[in-house]
Amino acid sequence: MGQDPGLRRLALGTLLAAYPGPVPPDWAVDLLADGLAGHTLFGTNIHDPAQVAASTAALRAGHPDVIVAIDEEGGDVTRLAHATGSPYPGNAALGAVDDPALTREVYAAIGAELAALGVTLDLAPTVDVNTADENPVIGTRSFGADPKRVAVHSAAAVAGLQSTGVAACAKHFPGHGATVADSHHELPTVDVPPAVLRERDLPPFAAVVDAGVRAVMTAHIRVPALTGDGPATFSRAVLHDLLRVEYGFTGAVVTDALEMKGAVLAAGGVGTGAVRALAAGADLLCIGARVDAELVESVAAEIVAAIGDGRQARERVEEDRAAERGRAGCPLMRSGRAPLDAAVVQG
Image (cartoon, rainbow, N blue to C red; front, side):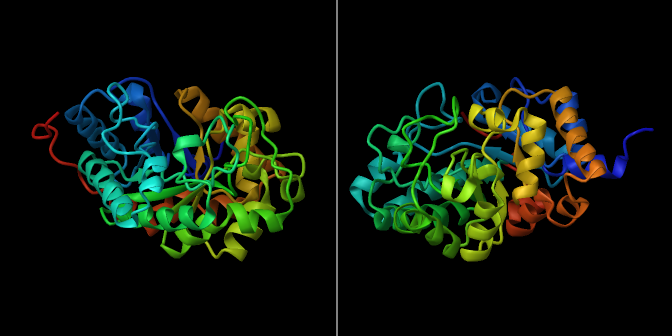
């Protein structure tokens, strides 16, 4: 018995994939026509502005409302300027200057550049409060160690970015700043009661929700009091009870890359992780950077199988589809506004 094509399309609609090289391969475009939510661009996809604009145009040919995402934080994390370094100050510098108007201006400049290239979702800003000096993964990506200061600058960054029509994605919920392990390689643990999170880690997330942020990214971290033995990405207590109910967030919940060890080790595989994240309340499942058609199809098939055997409610992919939630929240994610013509984009 073959796979239900309607269920396959619904499953694909929860996935944010990626592809190798500067030109989208046929499978990456064809899957968009089949319902894939979108792709994330990485450094290997970036050569120059004209090429990026041509790539996003090719993706829109597969689906006019494709979500084109990128990690463009400024400072240490850049994809557009991966070969030369970002021309924009990072969050640590902006927090040290402590001028929210400047933070808004910098993020508006980043957003304008992304919008011109056809990117619709920036996986930024990082709004983690960097309270652990030895943190190996956040560090200068944070606006600082003071929750109030981080909250003010996080809201300013979201306002600046979204003023250009590019959706912002605040990360990493419920806060990656107190970890001393890197979730790319293992599952970090933050063993504190929820009251500490609310006072120390969560004020910036409350601020960006109030600022209308379109998306929030989950953290592959373990907070035993909330998540048990697994990461926040797989915790309904975190994604639904805390983020949606307590903090009132109505946008798209995006997972950090499911290929990261913090997720894979906890789930036993990317497909299983996708099912667990959906069940917890995630809408858009970021597979990672090393993606091909076979991996996308296997993850979609795992979601379909989970619906068939009762591990996953069909309503979760029917009513809370990532692409629909995302596009409804942001003009670019909804309409796929065209970038500047590739022929006139200058390097």
